[in-house]
Image 1 (spheres, rainbow, N blue to C red):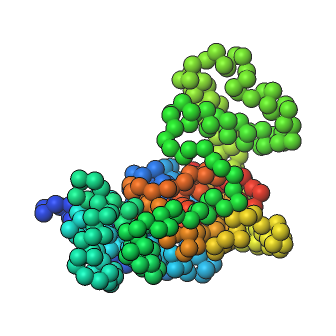
Image 2 (image 1 turned 90 degrees about the vertical axis):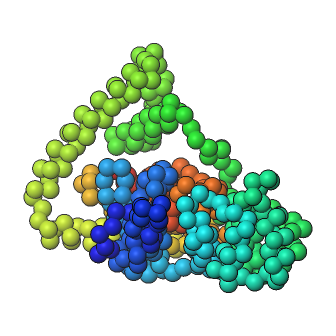
Image 3 (image 1 turned 180 degrees about the vertical axis):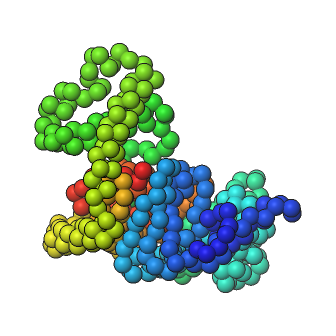
Length: 373
């Protein structure tokens, strides 16, 4: 960004009278997305998410990778513009980013939005309708549901009367099977899921992806010798195995890469992009081959490159929610805000992508989601 600041949010945040935190002050040339935001440890601002060029550095907990696309990735949809506009106005008043404002400040937020709902009495009536019972505050989620409809032409009376109170189905619900609750899971359950995923990847790497019965019969959870171990003992055994595999893999990669100069590496990456583009065009040539969710909203073509593991380029498509879906639906204010953020089964990169395009769906084109570590 060309700016020496210690934070990745937009503009400047005054925490107290003596403490000011500076963030990004303008759109940088290259963007940045972070896995830490998906974990709700920080918030990346809109400037980094909408850079001048469609290139994003993706930060994980231990590594940096690259995601890029064409100019259409930077084109803001009506829902994007509407959401960003409301977020900026709300955060202007909610300086501490608590996710709520005092009901007496609703008029000021409307002024920042240029939204005219009539008289002062009308604003106070709406504030009373949106107020959390007895708390004298208005939550972001309630504010967004009402304000987005007002900005799209709904009348104040229709909101106060509760008309169309049920939001439309989000993109993640269109043509997709119902998913289990996306609430927090226990460490034990997360470890089991991670072990199952790693075992599946191990089977594929060893050419056993078609041996379903053999994989099921030899799965870690069914091994009597392993099932008697405690979770801690099993985790240590599994980690030792992964460390040994990574050591052997890294040694092989170092040996192979010493024979490649920069020109060869650049040409190999260019060949990968060309091959991936041709393969993607073949897979998307027929409308019937597209999943149901790509028939709704805008679909973007993106690529992810990880220089580890010998260099892996993965093409994929992201379908964003449409303006009609965004209006009146629950969308998080930020990394720590409430809403209907959904965690899919596409791995860490999919969660990171959704920090840029909330409620989007990702099509991995029949491939496994790439690693960002």
